[in-house]
Length: 233
Image (tube, rainbow, N blue to C red):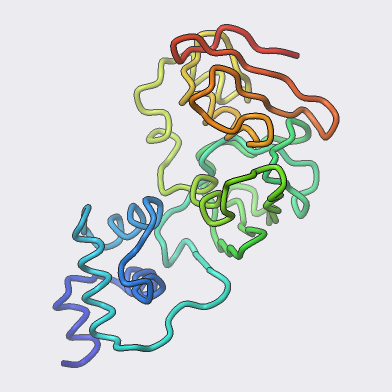
């Protein structure tokens, strides 16, 4: 069976889907939720069928080494990619995973392109402004979190409308303003402010999350029954 015919027989559509699934076929179909969502959007496969499709492609390609050391997720290959939450920056080439709340806001749901990810940093271009960003994964601020897992929650195939589906209007207004307000759900807070550094918030199940204004100043967000009741300064 020829490669093209085999891919068509496996139901893979488009060079982007082929490139993406080739990248993960060498893992025998073990893909993360983020990767599976991307594959589903490009191929039409859902759930366990994603794993099956990856294994089909692995069989077709044989034992070739497919995975490069640096993962390049160009939007043209992966489909549209967006920021999963609000990101603050002062210099676009020095953005930190800690997400200090100072500088300019790159909104949640911003479409990005030319994405390149390796273990310690990610690069991408904001489609709207053409600004090129470089984000450093500060591992000491995220104990217990692997860099790969961090990037999977940092970028998403979901648009702003999809990220905020089911939120009330006040939550959406707060997210657009880059603020945490009383009454917001924890899920809405994650879109508004991102994931709190695990150094002070080891679990999202806690009723207190700690964020950072800068390297020296932090503040806490208190939840009761999953809703914000107070925001520290």
